[in-house]
Length: 148
Image (tube, rainbow, N blue to C red; front, top):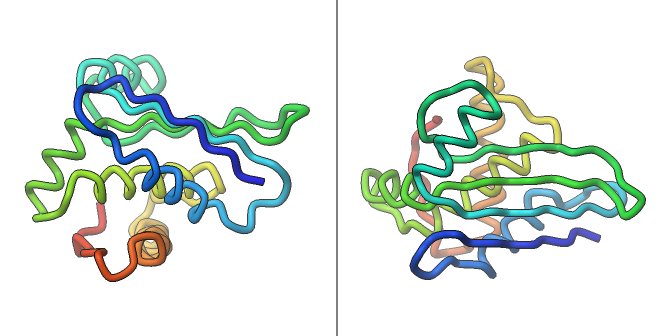
């Protein structure tokens, strides 16, 4: 079973149902129980967390953490940045909700063992990510065409 918990710390509507659906789709086929905690944060909080976690002093789109096994199952944590998503969505002519869903899928794929540290692995991960997003969003999905 895939259990998704969402906590938004930003003003405005958060597409909770979409983000939960995106996490479940990205982790489909996961063996055993998994709990995914998703926090939606603003720029300052994301920059602070990125600095603390990775020593990168800038705002990023998503941070993902695989905290390992617990008696209840695997514990995963995603932190996504709503203002970053809004900026990127505007740049690519997408909705902010779709961009946030992309961050959730991307973070879940990292937690599932996918990497994007080489051009080949980045292209493979992007292909998987886009397939999941098409499945989640159906006809309303518009790909950005950009491998980030």
